[in-house]
Structure formats: C-alpha cells, structure tokens
Length: 92
Image 1 (cartoon, helix red, strand yellow):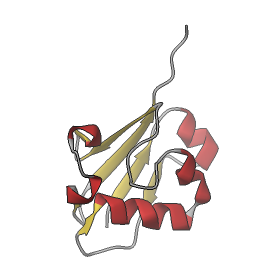
Image 2 (image 1 turned 180 degrees about the horizontal axis):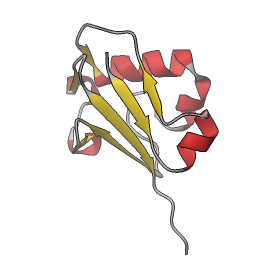
Image 3 (image 1 turned 90 degrees about the horizontal axis):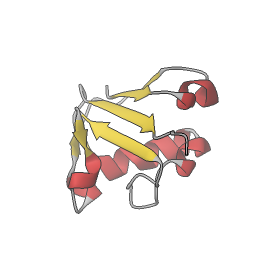
Image 4 (image 1 turned 30 degrees about the vertical axis):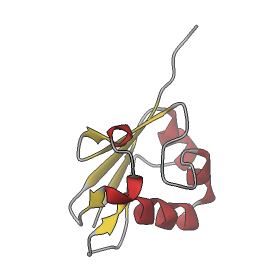
C-alpha cells in the first residue's frame, strides 16, 4: 500500500506524520490524489484538480519531484511507493 509522508507543518494540520492507503494495485498519481482528496478534503488545499501540487508544496514520488512530469497521470504509483509532501515555508 502506498505510504504518504507528511512533513513540517502538515504533521500538525493532519495530526499524523504518515498516511497509508489500502491499495494494492498500481495506479496513476492523479488517481491517488483523487482518492486522497475524497478521503480528506484538506488535500484539496495541497493539490490542483489535475494532481499537480499547488504553489508552496514540494511533492516527491519515490524521491522524484512530480513537477518534472508534464502529465501527472503518467506517474505510476506502486503499492510500495512513498509519496512525500513537503510544505515550502521560509521567512522573507
């Protein structure tokens, strides 16, 4: 089952550091994001409807930045994948 790691302030917002999905089949990143948003509406603040991260968030799938892909639906999420969500917080 894919594991979602929440970093920084997201741990306080969600009340946990890790979320696991009960999925055993491979799926696209876009499908995974739809399932996350259906499970918890707070993910809609992190992701655009097409699965792309909103500004202010870095999202890695198996340590690869999802922004390098033109089409989020082409990113394959396996049952053992780790998705890391990092809020980009900095002072000005």
